[in-house]
Image (cartoon, rainbow, N blue to C red; front, side, top):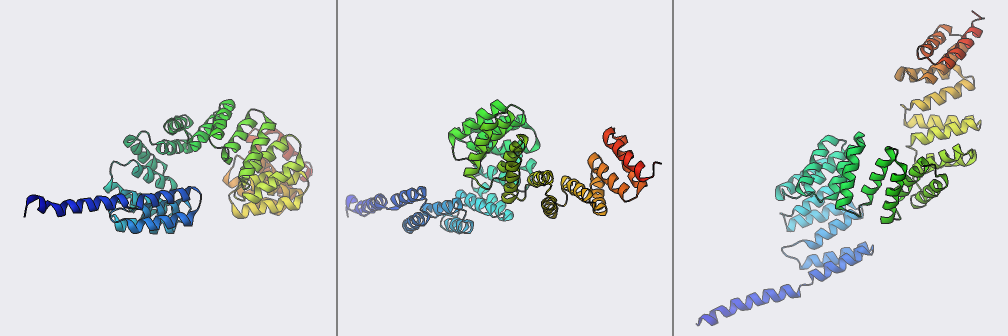
Length: 415
């Protein structure tokens, strides 16, 4: 057999393989799936990815895309299944392990997330996304110092990774180091100009620094990137309040609530604006809405209770304060207000019970000493009332000390 004849079958096989690759529908199916995913058609996109998967042998593009789409749709168990299926096909896929880690993190299954990240680190030690995700997991566990080390490692691996700069900024922001946080956020913006979250956080840094104009300009920049971001509107409202641009602030907060009706902080700030402008009914309504949509927001409970006390709605105020204390037993301002309410309604023993716990925890709370001293005096417990007077006198709170002393003297028959 001639050399040419012996090569003919090999050439035929090579051409067949190339022809099969060229005719493979995988790329087109993945493209169609991506297009459907972009249109929000989850089921149709997943169907395309599943069909692509039937044609893949040594790759797992369909399964990987399915996992990413399920992750974006917050269907975390389905995402885990998709990434595990991808690993069955391609056991050496660092991307699949990263996807698994993200899905486990979203479900707060931290040991499994860390285990997946260990595998990703072994497979791709130079991938900056690995330490980035490790840092995010640790940050969610309230371990900021450990998280910071991983964010900095990610930046050393890839200084253009905007997400790592952003999360590094978050660590410094949580520590109160606003200067370093702002530097990190600006680096995040420089590497990822469309990063709205970093822009909002930079605006918050300017807010905390008392630079209202700079904060407003930065937050307006965030809105130029995303007009549908409620937090950009909310913090812009804060900046406008700080700059005494009340009408603009009200409009910004209303826009925030239009986009996110459960944004209790926006209702709270609106109520504070109305309160300062003597629009008491509007303020009361805004505080009520804040409590309803954000029951965890203690400031809203306190503001509502104060508004109710001003309106002489003692029943409503008591209900608000007792509800807040049921969920947050350590809320000292709630206890002070409840003690004041008990005192006004001549429930002196209840006032003592509530207020004694306040001064045990915070001895520097002069209002609590004053109210507690009054309750003791009105119960005839003059020695204890005198001790509260002494606490006020030692704190140089002359007005309260004098008023309490006069009450003690009246109850003691002028002694």
